[in-house]
Image 1 (cartoon, one colour):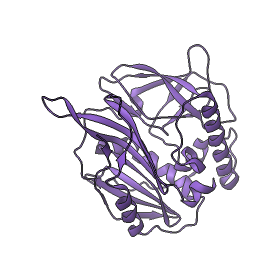
Image 2 (cartoon, rainbow, N blue to C red; image 1 turned 60 degrees about the vertical axis):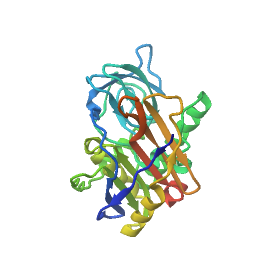
Image 3 (cartoon, helix red, strand yellow; image 1 turned 135 degrees about the vertical axis):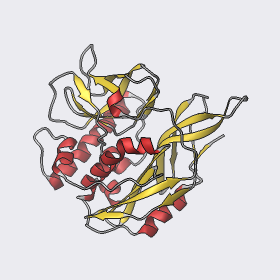
Image 4 (cartoon, rainbow, N blue to C red; image 1 turned 135 degrees about the horizontal axis):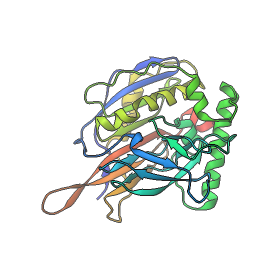
Length: 303
């Protein structure tokens, strides 16, 4: 059994400079009873000594909590982003794989805050699209070097920061975040006249928890492109190519699992869940979150 991307519906876009944001609706049941609040996660440097690629976390909520790849974790010895998506059980403590987004600082307090801000698609994927799994020490080092390289490329274009931190670029830009629309569960990002990607959630509360962060980080990427609006037909063509695709992952039988698909043009990665189907037990699969990318978008190919 595979996890399948459901039918998607695209609304009217909102344009600002080089960024166009399209709302997305999903033909799939809402999945509830999850905590999406980033503030429900207590995050700190490792008790046995700070390490760039690892933080310690505790779910403070009484429900399972979703933490997403690309979530910014600010403070501590340096600002980081979460390196992979995961679900933490109620009150669970766990080590978090992290990537540094502030190369020029190593020192400070031990606590981090997660406020819903997100690393942009360029910072997260850049020239490697969906090939971002953390497996061994060499690959972690390689991915970290790529993140620093992308932030450096952004700073060459948009201005240097004292500690070479991506959060500085978020602090510098200002955009009015479009209002979410009733029933909306996703957003498509168009930059420079072309679709860059999509973020999809299993509920409106999931999207709401990251919505401003998605738009604000996309606005940073848009400053690297021409100020051209993206036509709605390109957004509709993107979802036509995406919906109905089967995602790989979850063969081991776990309740929460990573999913992915990597084609010539579109790459997708996210989190799936086994949904209870009655007396027979878990019989179906749903999507908690999905990021999909147009791998040949000029910014993803060049930075």
